[in-house]
Length: 189
Image (cartoon, rainbow, N blue to C red; front, side, top):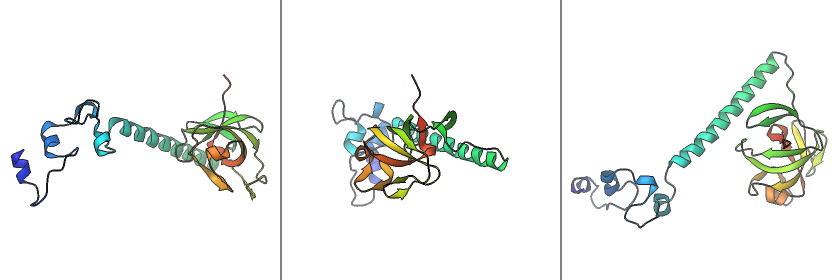
């Protein structure tokens, strides 16, 4: 420890942290524990967010979802160039197109625009007509009008906010516009 202390820049101190001299000598803490801070105290409790196995796993899931979405997009693009008709109202489930088409009146899940594997709310599909007006704007092609019934992730932002409807919790009981590629039919149990 004395040798490492001598290598510090002049006038600087070895502040306690996940990479301090003590941590360099003892190695990685077991199970994310912050040693010498008491039982049950974790590194993230003392020094904030520190990369962990859980964080890396979450990042991996997110990147896999993005990769799956990219592959789906490329497949659809290739299918269109092969003159194959792709159902624009096909439902998606974790980035994979299913054969359950979207139908007006059906219960559906709305997926997050940031993470298409995450269901943010449950609602009922009211319209797929591009001329339907939601929030004083026509929804347009590739969009559906959805009556939000239950906000599963209430802090998720509405794709097209209007008036006082900005988050899913505020959209509960209201019709909003949502991209059809982010809608999936609620499976029957």
